[in-house]
Image (cartoon, rainbow, N blue to C red):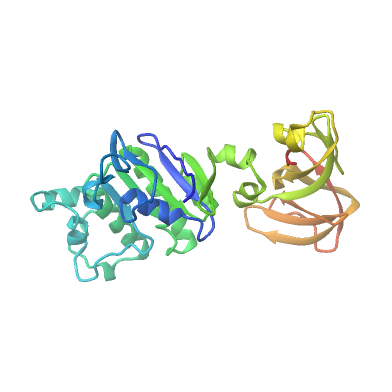
Length: 333
């Protein structure tokens, strides 16, 4: 972690998105107290749990932080029943059948207390892990890629259930994933990590439409790129003069005046383009997803990804025209 500052509001869900090795899990372990930072402070509510305060520095042990954590592999005890797994983190005086049954009911597993983990499906085991983290009524819930071991169809159902549960219980949560769809579904806001640094934190819509750099632009969605001249706040593209929406690209390197000429890399999202009759571009690839399709067209050496309906009616090798349908573009000087 390098110069990282993040504030999560009470009841908010923050999703941390980034490639493997960027520091997502390390950040969760720092919050939970499983790792001790070399510098900086960590504060839960109005309570400092890690920091330089005092002679030896402030340090609150993990078990005293009121932080729940759901691990990537769920980490259920195979020799304990579901009920005993859920009650494992509770104080002995609170480890009652009523408390355990109430928690299992929250995650839709009423009546499962006497079952063994091996008799459950993957989705049910994931919910047991979630119930175990929720049972002590944590102030903050940390989720470390909890859906990565589920197949794709089950993953969509479970993540929607978890999102609903977080909203209903008004839980402050930090969720780690490398999957953009998961981050956008679960997070009220999404933070993108790169090499231990927080590149950008914004709403899903803000990240997708207003990325701060090319790394974020590529990581949170599909993007095509055009290398163009720019001047006067416009990029001069094969589609004509397109207004640049971000100030840095309008001014060029070093904050030069808006009227000066410079070069920019222009980002185009697939839904900003459409196919038309013509022969300026050649179709190189058609990717079919069922609900829609993606057509990759080569326009003078630039590969443009165009989102189409489920029946694009083009094949590889066809000649087409590509038109711009948006209102402005994001560019990077």
